[in-house]
Length: 250
Ligand code: PGA
Image 1 (cartoon, rainbow, N blue to C red):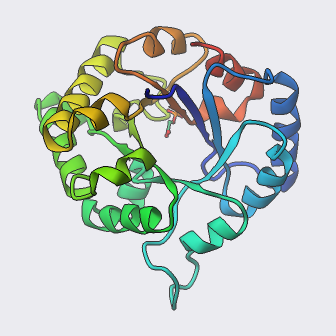
Image 2 (image 1 turned 90 degrees about the vertical axis):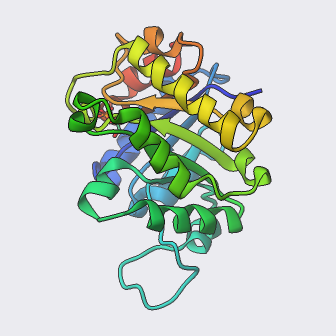
């Protein structure tokens, strides 16, 4: 059975004091047993304090990125084992901002995913088209290439560790969302691709999240679609009331 998941991507927002404030608000708002698996992804410097603050709650703390190498001379980078050593077992890989601003190609992302799997970590793998791709009707093919080049080489057994997040780039931080129908159409396409390339069981059991301007007023409609299993939330996850309202949208 695939899970409903709502994950907050805090991106490069909030220093330590602001993170602690958000965490206390979150703890106040959140019901003890939410309908969805809840995750939050703070910046590297706030990972450990967030992990400590949430360890008596069901909320899972994820990293926003990690390096593909196990260790070595990569100044400024963070490895899987460093994350694991502070209790972090989940990592976002392939966010469109990493692809666009840090030149992360499908090939590099394949390596990052492999390293995460080798370290028994869970991966939230992001993919999605830009506006031009959609306008020229290339969005289905583009998504297929992203998944093929970064994920379809994985053995079946690795798929229990993979959560997918479809994030059309034109909907991220823009206030413009894909319509629930557009989200469903792409999620169905992705599930069909999984069925064809990996197998029926994986297709049925992999959670596919939607990301891109999800807010309390549109979450319910989007999450109600058959192949949408939750959301990856940027802006609205920085506000505890909004984020919890989205978590409660199932
Ligand atoms: P947004 O970001 O909710 O602010 O559009 C989503 C994301 O980047 O994951």
